Length: 267
Ligand code: ADP
Image (tube, rainbow, N blue to C red; front, side, top):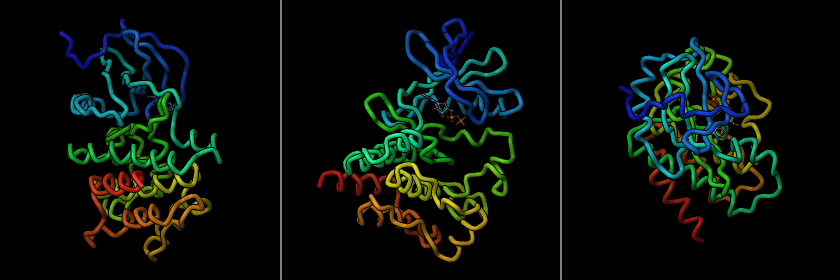
């Protein structure tokens, strides 16, 4: 008896390799005539039992600006996670490969797409935990969609999960996450500010030459990422709002950010 979120391996055709991720290789594939991305999960890479339960929650999350999880294939090892396929790949690479070609409208549109997905996650009480341009994908029609929501919870490699680890995304993390691992929709908002900075910097690495430790120190000293050349003052103000200390109680919600970005897009 298979559940409806279980993908029958018979229905899945694997194609070219797309890349390698946190858990293992990612393949292009076909599932019931739909183009899909299949993430394979190495046996030692994920807390499988917990993931199986959570996968059911993640499948119920559905929004036009979220990369849809279609199902999971768990009859055999490695596990397969079957996702909606996005033709234009990860947002960081997309931005880098098309530098100097983006209109202001396009850059703002990318931020707006992500804010829509995040407002939906926020209203679903679901925390992303690793929002960054590298975890967004771009569709054939250039819609940006948010991917990998909640997935870091299942990574076993402590270089990723410990804030001292070499692979921990310190540069996207709110201070309360670096200090106490206190994840919330408000810590996602901080990351969203960094993501907007990445968009307006056309895929540059935030705090380019600094080490993680130097970044933490400069944040404590009150320094923030500088205004990218392509970024209008109005958008930079939103970024800076995302980078307030959460204890001050005045980091905006995604609902509010979406509203603000939408009104900038209307101008
Ligand atoms: P992980 O998040 O587990 O580290 P990634 O999401 O980075 O894995 O996947 C590795 C690569 O596979 C990405 O850089 C991207 O190019 C590609 N990829 C992942 N998911 C999709 C998808 N849904 N559609 C198209 N390409 C994808």
